[in-house]
Image 1 (tube, rainbow, N blue to C red):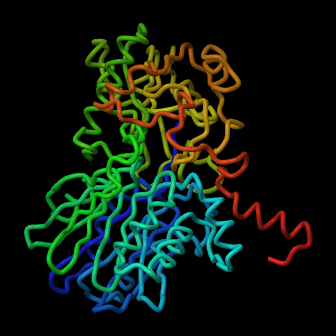
Image 2 (image 1 turned 120 degrees about the vertical axis):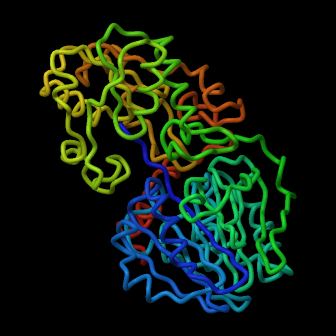
Length: 478
């Protein structure tokens, strides 16, 4: 069973006009796993912004003709979206472009603001009119208002950071500068690198840097702002150290690609270690270990190495179907389209099945059903994350406890519900070792939140659409 996180962001800054749109295209392709609802690219052509964004996958939105329609430029920002705030609509596609008397700005955002509801209400009461239901427009409004009195765009961004709470990795573009920002907790990853030709590249994950031939220089530090101007990058650190670092541990468990390195820790190595820990703490007598593609495969390899049980390919993923959980709309029928069993690998065998999480239990039950139909004699499910017990307000699409099966059932009851012969979760206390640091956020597992928790209902994904609906019911003009 999979979890959906919000977005992937990408930015380019070169000294001379280049095919920035093509670089963004390849970068977004490498970040497609972080969002499949929509995508967009905005190119800066000597101060003029040209954009293309729409619902769909990167290859669907950016056809050859669509890419050719974008000009060459010295800068560009790009975004691929899975919305944990706001519905699936063209209005919520990013990057958001702002035209203002202080100049244009394009902004792309990964994460969720925990105080978005309060900020949006304040802005609306002061006359702001919102065209989207995403947190990103709230950030854009605040930056734009601060720009009225700030001496520079980076000063406006710094002032805006004083008001933002929660998760926000940002890449912004003004007519002359590319700016990247990571929130003071560092909830979401952000890194930058440079190509052999001298082009600076910013991305959510290091795998996207390699996709465009850039070498990773380093991660952006929590609270850091980096300005890529005509004279090269400049770091501003006035927000660094203002809050304890709290990188989302689920980046290592599921969100990130296994070939990425986040804050110095290999995602692949973290997942292999999770499998080893599971083998030690949740052993099973079995004939073969298999993983649920894609994020369960590395942990299955680790389980096999530690336990001595042979590793096998028991499930095949249709490579033309995206991640089940983060694809918008109904998921039930997608499981069989997405996955099929290798009967030769599982027929008559006792199987250890490794997956990254169980949220609702519906997808897990269907995967086990597929394996049973293929002839698996026993299925012992092991999960490379602890049970999900609490909502997340920082970008994971778990906005309430209502749908969390672990809140309603014991481990044995969950095993019975999904059809497993046994079930074991990763121990909570192993998470710091998995991430290689104690500086992690694991609030969805233990309920210890790094920031103030939104009021009831304010953390739900479609809260702004719901607010409008309630107004309409009361007869209040939108």
